[in-house]
Image (tube, rainbow, N blue to C red; front, side, top):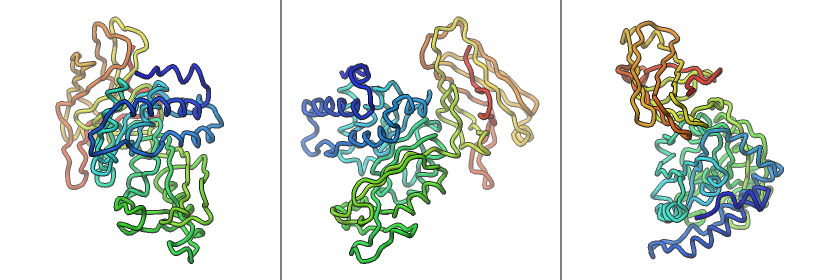
Length: 386
């Protein structure tokens, strides 16, 4: 198992840490056989940490400040090299990919997780058709070399902007047409490749010009803070090896929930008006308890909206902390309420809190969401342990 403190004790920059971890992973892979019908992902994903290090000007603390107390998301994880590296920085990581197009059908990332004794959470998700992320609160997302593999890149960028405060993204770009006779660089357009036109890979779709990339990122809810290109950007085209240029950007979401002392898990709808989130009937969060609590008091401040109250007249809210049930609370008036539950003792570490309402508004033709409570995320944390 890799000593996750090794990188931070021997080296200082993100580039150096990633390079050291890359060597470690290469040794692990050489000693870990896969099914003979497949091979390890052949490209060195971690080399792209050089660009992130450049954006951060060697300030690792800047990355940790962006992540905050929330997990990190690796979209298009391949063998998980980046996900496992980010885990060594002391953060929880969700790694997702689409199984039919993953290079070795997830055998590599699962083999590495077992070999490393990792807690990275691996999910098979088709972002093109149902971009339902494992969590709705990420501090930082990595999506490198994925955008041109998506049929619906705008949809995915919007979904990520709602769920993650920052994104580090790369994609192939083009300034010239495939025959290199037409200059597209001044236009915000994308070229749709044929099934066999780019590396004979039918999972390739849209190649953006730089202007189109910046526009789609902005319209999807992101503000670009850092940007650079690698390769012949002015002479790039969408299909030839000689015309392969890549754009890298670091962007901040305008629509994601602000950082908080807890992490939303299942059962939360997207942020509205930059402050409110609806819950479903059943929803959950994670909180960090830095010290044991005896007893532990859970407080949850929420709104019982008029629209819900008019349908159900009262609600009973139940909760469990790490599987231990708390006393339920019943609320019979609309407006702001506070649920308080006490458990005799709680160990230090991550606490999972599961909430459940006895009733909620069912999906309808007017609103296909299940609606329970409304929670304000713009001020003090609505869910706390003390």
